[in-house]
Image 1 (cartoon, one colour):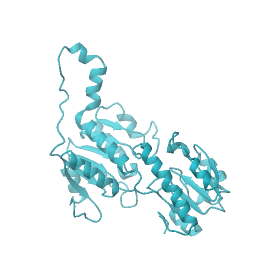
Image 2: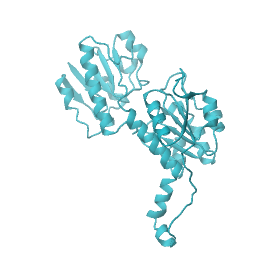
Image 3: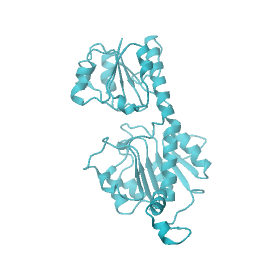
Image 4: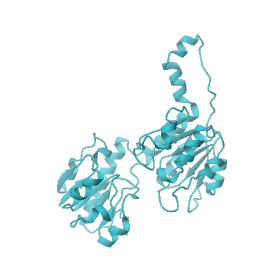
Length: 316
C-alpha cells in the first residue's frame, strides 16, 4: 500500500508523520504545486491532504487510488461527485480542533474589544515611559460582560465558543439550520443586527457561500466585532475591508480567506495596518494538541477503511 502526503508543511514541521509508515510505503511532500499533483498521485493507494484541490483534472491519473484522507473537517477542496463516480472513498476528520479554534476566537474577541495591541504598542514604543502618567485609558474599551455574542453555526466549534462566551458573561444568540433548545436561535439578519460580537463557524457550501454579504455587513452595529474562523468565501471580503476602512465596524478578526495565502491585490491587504483589525494565517485549527489528534484520526480512518468499517466518510 502506497500513501502520498501532498502538503505536509500545512500540518506543521513539529508533527512527526512516522506513524503513517506503519501502514505502508509513505511518500511525503512538503508542498505540491498544482502542476505536479497528477504525477505525484498516479501510483498511490491513499492520498493525505489538507488544502490541495483534488478533482477530475488531477485525479484521472490516479488509477490505483482507493482513499482520500483530508487532514481537516471541511472538504470543499475535494470534488466529491467525481470521487463517488470513481468509487474513491473520502474521509474527513471531525472534532479534533474544537478547543483550538474556540481559543483563537476568544483571543481575537478579547484582544479587539480591549484594544490590546494599541495599549501594548503604547508601552513598547516608549510613550508610556515618556508620559510621566501612571496609566493610559485611551482608546476607551468596554467590558464584554453583558454584551450579546452571535454565533453563526452551532456545531462542535460553535457550541464551544458559545460556552466560553457565556463563561465571560455574554448573552449568546445563535443562527442554526436546526434550532438548538439550549440557545436562543434567531435568523441570520436578526443576529447581525443585534450582536456586539459575531463569530462564524459554518462550513462552506452552496447555502453559506457569501452568507455574510454587503447588506448584512452594513446592518451590523458600528461597534460590533466580527470574527471569521470558518471559510473565507462565507463572507464578502471586499465589503468587510471597506467597512473597516470606513470605520463602520468596531473590530475585524479573520483567520480564513477565499484565496490562501491572499495576494497584494486582495482587499484585506489594504487594512493590514489598522489597529482594529486582527488577521491571522489560517492557524486557528492548529494547536499542537489538535494536530496530534488530527493525525491519530487519519490513521484510524485508514485502518477502518481497510477493515470495511465506515468511519468519517463524506462521500456516502
